[in-house]
Image (cartoon, rainbow, N blue to C red; front, side, top):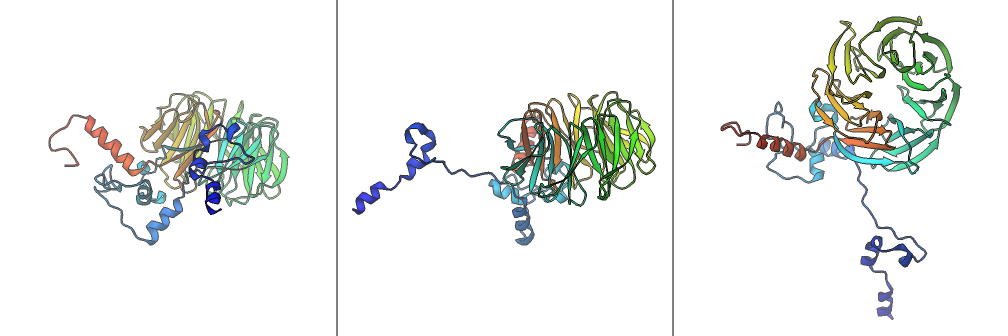
Length: 420
């Protein structure tokens, strides 16, 4: 009897190989699924490892060289040890914090273009706004789908968290604006504009925010009373972007009239107009210290404007097509990334007109949404190609191997081999 019972036990090998069989012939009332290991990107484990176990990082060359703060290339490390030996994102140099390595792609079950992506303030989830009016929440560590919510009746065009993270504001193509609790409970619905709400930006506190719309206006709102305080009119066409200064009562806006305008929201008046672009402006971002304004658009150039000297000081011209999005690194003031309509990602250092890194064909179509994880070690991008893609920093061994290969490809000069 014991031998018969043993023979009736399921064979582990058969279960593991079930995926290679036709389910019509092996189906017995239960769906057999093979266990898979889901890739997880959790920076906390590496931080705890470095913080409390005090493991030294094996440095092979001084930190001023391009191999500084990287593991010894003569040694081979597993993928886990590479991550543990990587420098904390909070203390990286711009060249060390570039998130150019593809990590994962997430696609909704019902495929639709992604218009905007935003991390939650705690960094645990990524929200994507789709052209079907849905919010999709993705796990920020394992990238898997968590939940989906029919938030709007038309395409979601803009998302913005309040500085305190207590509520979220969204806008759609019908001009509807909604307030959301972090638990995704809808708090309020307002008919804000007659045309799509293209951009939303908060002041340094939760008290005020502004919205930009294709109806040619920028509206100032009081968050506590949920009422409109005034309108800023002056653009001759659609207003595509509007960004509130991180410290001052100052708003920068841009649109189809090719102009960047500066406004004082207290008196509801235009302060100045900048003629620095030759085509529609699609992206604006203030630097963290508020000294510089980055702008990009259909003229395929990102401009850097110095607010103190009140002049353009840098132009970043390596884009193949129009610039559709700009995102600053949350912890490194001088690092930012731009996206273009051909699907490329461009990483820049603010005081260098040459790109640090270019990721060609990061997406198959126009990238409309970019957002860094609050720690800065992951970049999320959303595109018309129906996908959200996650990008991480290159692993140390990969960086070193690429550098060694580039050196070996050049003609060797005696006495100049840094590895001798």
